[in-house]
Length: 524
Ligand code: SF4
Image (cartoon, rainbow, N blue to C red; front, side, top):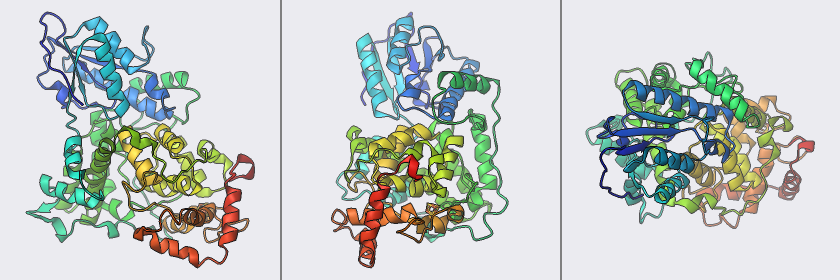
């Protein structure tokens, strides 16, 4: 994204600093050299950002509440600010419309915006500035450790973009969990220690994450969201997300002290009725930039160095933050705008009704998890990947419909997060540009990693018959359907060979055809 230099005019607003709803960091590059005497901050609540994907009520509440708290902080810091509230007279409801309104009001010599985290937003801002004839400069987003240019330099010319090849040099460059030139503990990756399931006894007494009861300002936003978006998905009765930097730091403290020590071992485990387990619940605050990934990583490393948490837990968590999170952001920009339209497996089934209404399915895992998403706008990465995305993948749901659903429902669903995670990792729609093999699994995986199957009418071991687990049936059908497509892929060869051992493959495929017509009335 380029910018244009400008000859600044004295006597009116010199710079209009436009802050987007997910750019709530006080140390953003847009504040470099900020002079409240001549510079003005502009923020706008616009309905289009909640309706272009029909956002979960909690997601809209989080954005608006965090924006209003940030506005108050900037004012108390002495900055001049124009804040366009959602229901203000004349609010045009779009980002470019709001920007045009602000340009008309303040006649700035220059607009400064931090690089947005979504392709379409940069384009909308650019065209508004062009239309109004005002110079625009995109300031670099310093939130990420790796810029899009640095990622492109890493990725260019590589045959495969493996996380590990990206993560290790990053650790070394920033001195994260390093002893000189070597990784602490003599190895880079403790992945094999991070796949534990809870035994029969379960996770035991879990430390509940710190809850942040809505204050007066958040309560007003909740009332606004209930009134403006009654038909949007989700429930606000449990809204307790951190909405300020101070609260986000408290949430970080809470995670480091109470859940990080067990995070690594159980990060892939699921347990009925326990959505949080040992997860950090920091992704929303990080994506709003209320937290900086460097401080989060430093706190985790400190916990290891002081003996508060073991290396496998700390490395597993750090890999999520400076490994996966940075990698996904880099891929989003590297793959470009058209990547989201990929459909390499030609999956054309419409979104299954159970994603909209969890009560219409008897699949216990899916019903519980979709209900959790409805209640909290969040579940951790394994239900997202191995239950929701896995079902969309093996059932052949259209990737763009599923992406839209994921963007709508999750509190942390920034475009840069969701596009690679869904298109590349979740439903393998990109012909393997991101991941070398699809994350397809039958009921056995869910049974091993959770307690859902105990309360289910289906049997994860069965692939045909009335009590056959739809995951198991669809898993084998998926492999059979795409056998040719994956024929040369050695990473999935063992799974494909499994097809040859199935004496009932014809029956499985017939049953999968019946499942293909998943409708409310047959309870799937
Ligand atoms: Fe889910 Fe199948 Fe287990 Fe039921 S049996 S909970 S559908 S994996």
